[in-house]
Amino acid sequence: MTKLEKKLINVLEKYLDQIFLIGMLVGSCAIRYVKRNYISWDMSSSLLPWYDQIKDLGGYSH
Image (cartoon, rainbow, N blue to C red; front, side, top):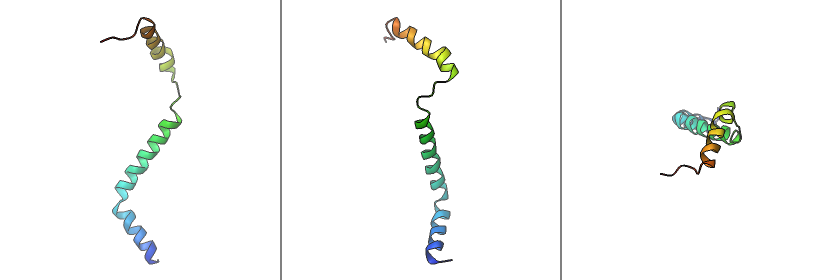
């Protein structure tokens, strides 16, 4: 094993938790970006008609 490999292994062992967390964060953002236009059955059958009805009646004023 070379010096570079030893350094790389030491860095990976030292920062494994942070690397894992960043990987999970990047992965979750990628999944959300890819699925951003996905409309589920629940959304199309319940939420969108409800939203359209609220919008047609003038919206929500507070």
